[in-house]
Amino acid sequence: MKRFFLALALCAALLCTGCTNTVELASHPVKATLRPDSGLKSWSSAEYNFSFSYHHTWYAADSTTAIVTLVSPAEDATPGFREYIAFGGFFNTEQKTAAEIADAGVADMQKLFPSVTLEKSSSVQLSGANAELRIFKGHIDDSNLGAADDYFWHQYTWLDSDISYSLTFACTEKMSERYLPEFEFVKSTLVIELS
Image (cartoon, rainbow, N blue to C red):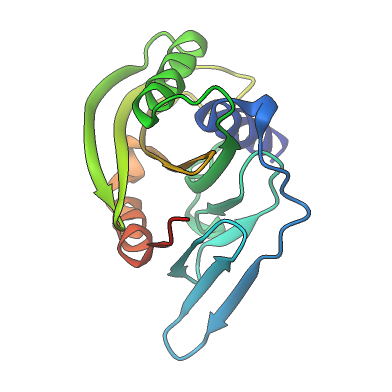
């Protein structure tokens, strides 16, 4: 379990990029609610101007490197790794574009894991916000981070004022068929209120 949290923290930190300027997380009120009639939970924060819903089988993990991290159900976890969906944010003090920030996130992963390759790079709309999508994958065999496996990431990056936000989905290839629909569901319920 220690490896899982180390891997989660490292990947989230890299994917949020600009970790030295991470938005202070502890002082912002977060509202998580369970809607038993639908089996869904919802998450919102007036401070970050976005909200979304997710299935109750996923749970929010404590994180100091992301605004919120949803972790896959425990009963079907990949050994040594837990698939996750993370929302990150940091102050964009260098006034980089969303594309520059997204590309830097991929480059940071490639430095750490040379087998990571960029599969797709495009400008997209995400809940009305202009965003950059990066899909990258690679075989990772690092005993410090957990099981060796083929991983892939979908990462959306968007800007709101002086803050850069990211929505990242990390998964093993073998669990993608099961978990990609959850990520698509979270995206479909995402509401971004730009300042």
